[in-house]
Image 1 (tube, helix red, strand yellow):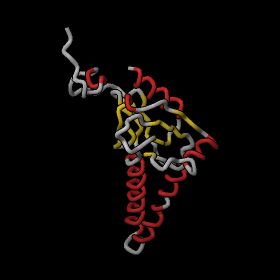
Image 2 (image 1 turned 60 degrees about the horizontal axis):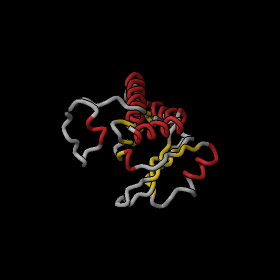
Image 3 (image 1 turned 90 degrees about the vertical axis):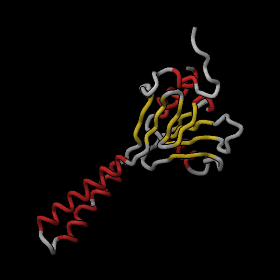
Image 4 (image 1 turned 180 degrees about the vertical axis):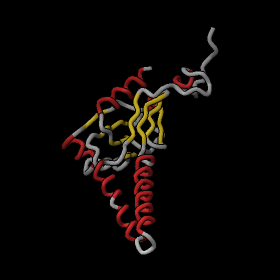
Length: 169
């Protein structure tokens, strides 16, 4: 006989042993676009110019180190979309999948409309420039002031499918 499940705990909390997280069904880092990374890399020659009066070698090393630090910081600070343990996680924000409605993925002109004038006033959003796809997921919790989650993704169909799978399990 199985022990009774606590009604306050999401069902996914019982699927993995305590202290062991289940593998995510979907994971994507919204890393910066190539143009953003190239723009950040321009910092190397600018920083090098500051140190040239001291020594050319120091200037070169300082520029390269600064560029590497900026690029690594941009990539590591990029938010992660993850569907795991019955939850949708977007950066530090998370919501149980059972509180979400039917996800819809958009690209092209539809995505541009949703990111711009079509963005609801009560939406929680995580939008990134240079990423075309957008997923819109309604929130079915009457106590939540947020009516919909809107977020950028490179693969809207895969995220939507992962959310649906998480809702059905």
